[in-house]
Length: 369
Image 1 (cartoon, helix red, strand yellow):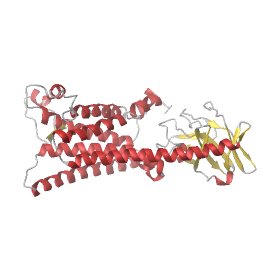
Image 2 (spheres, one colour; image 1 turned 60 degrees about the vertical axis):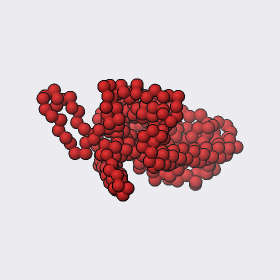
Image 3 (cartoon, one colour; image 1 turned 180 degrees about the horizontal axis):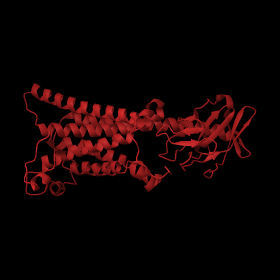
Image 4 (cartoon, one colour; image 1 turned 60 degrees about the horizontal axis):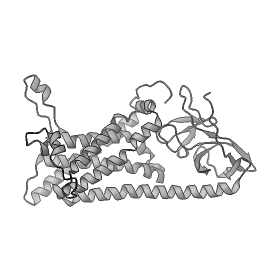
C-alpha cells in the first residue's frame, strides 16, 4: 500500500491455506502415477517413469491454472468462494513450478557437482522433464533443438505444439515473479493488473498445447477431454457471471435513472440496507458500494485500489470498509485508508429523505486526512 514496503508476514491462515494446497497437489501426483501404472499393467504394458511424471506434473499445472481462472467468476456468483481468493497468487506460483518441473524435470543441476569433480546425487522422485526427454538425443542443445527441430507451422497435425507450452511457461514465470505486492506498488496497479491479465494468454496457449500434443505423441483421449472440460468450465463460468452482473447492473441503472434529479439519485429504501454489509448500486454506469451503520449510510466506489476487488461484497468494521479479496481497508466516511496508509477510493455524498437513500451523481476524492 502507500506505507513504505515491508515484507509480508506468514499468518496462520496463510500457512493452513498453503498446507492444504500442497497436500492436494501431492495427493494428485501420487494418485495420477499409481492409476497410470495400474492401467498399464492391466493391458500388459510397462509405463516409463519419465513419461508418467511428465504427464502428471503437466496435467497438475493445467488443472491448477484452470481452477485459478474459475475462482474469480465463482466468487462473483457466490460469496462463499471468497476464501479461495485470499492466496490465489500462491496457486499461480505453484502452477508455474509444476509447469517448470514438467518442462525441465525434477532433479539437481549437474554443473556445480561436475565442477567439484563429484557425481550428481540422486534425489527421491527425480525425473527428466519433457525438454531433455524429447530433445536430448542429438548433437544440439535441447533448447536449440526445440526451436529448430520442427518447423511445420503450416500444418495443424505437425504444428510445433511445444512452442505453445513454452510461451505459456514464460507468461506464467513473469506473473509468478511479479506476484508480490512489492511489484504491485512499484509498477502501479494498472500496469500490474495488465501484466497479470496475461494469464488468459497463458491459458489459451496451454489449451492449444494440450489439444495438439496428442495428435503427434500421446494419443490418450483423456488429455483432450481434460482440455475441453476445462475450457467449457472456464468460459462458461465467465459468461454466466458476466451475464448475471450485466443483468443486475441494467436493472439497477434503469431504476436509478427513473428517480434521478437535482444531482442526486434515489437508489433504495433505508430499511432495505443491511447493517454492516455492502449493497451494490449502479449510478451512471458505475458501481457504487453502499454501507449502513445505524441511520448513517456511506457510498464508495465499488473498485478497491489494490486489485479492483468488489467492495460491495465486503463488510463494515470499526468504521472501515474491508475489501473481501485481500482485506484492504478504507474509512467509510472519507474513502481513505487508515494511517499510516494513503490509498483512497472515491466517495459519493449521501442524503436520507423520508426513509429513502439518495446518492450524488458525482463522486468526490477526499484528500488524505
